[in-house]
Amino acid sequence: GEDVEQSLFLSVREGDSSVINCTYTDSSSTYLYWYKQEPGAGLQLLTYIFSNMDMKQDQRLTVLLNKKDKHLSLRIADTQTGDSAIYFCAESQENTGFQKLVFGTGTRLLVSP
Amino acid sequence: DTGVSQDPRHKITKRGQNVTFRCDPISEHNRLYWYRQTLGQGPEFLTYFQNEAQLEKSRLLSDRFSAERPKGSFSTLEIQRTEQGDSAMYLCATQRNPGYEQYFGPGTRLTVT
Image (cartoon, rainbow over all chains, first blue to last red; front, side):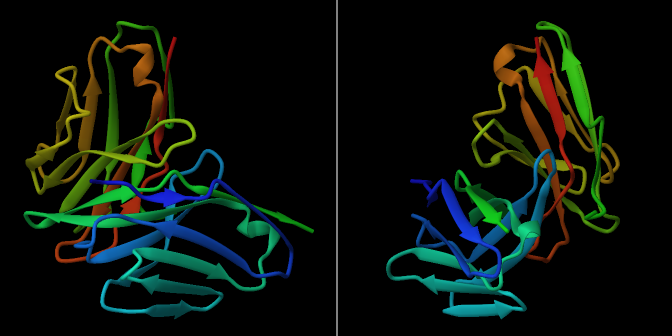
């Protein structure tokens, strides 16, 4: 089945670290993604991780993947007010040569000064 | 700005009217996807093009929906006899082949009154 789950809301103070969690169901997913969506806008690709990796770091972003538990997390270091947005986790389902992304419902991150 | 453009950005229409949306991909991206996002949800896959060929359609794409990509560049999504349940954000994403990154446009927000 296709089901990607995320907690709905996270509130942090500026300068703190934020950790957004996601669980997915398709053990055959080869890539897992994090996208950011600001109000009224499209989705911005933040980072992605290949399923044979445990961790990926990209500047302030750290992605951790626990394939056994099908758990993905995104850590944002030194969170800024500009990081306030909705963050979507997505798994890719490889179907006959193309990638269908299955998204979670999104986690709304609110960063207060 | 990802380089993927969509037009119009907003569309308000009366129930029963036909609407058409356009997506212009990043040049050389021969994979193109349409997704639909309803309020409070993540995007859901609608259809996929490889060049001009439509290779996959979701069950969400009823007979009232049709998509084309006539020359393998821009794509159009048409909804006939719109219903209030069609109100959503319609997102286009493009991808290089081979490649693992889908880049999204800003979306077209459709409101059916």
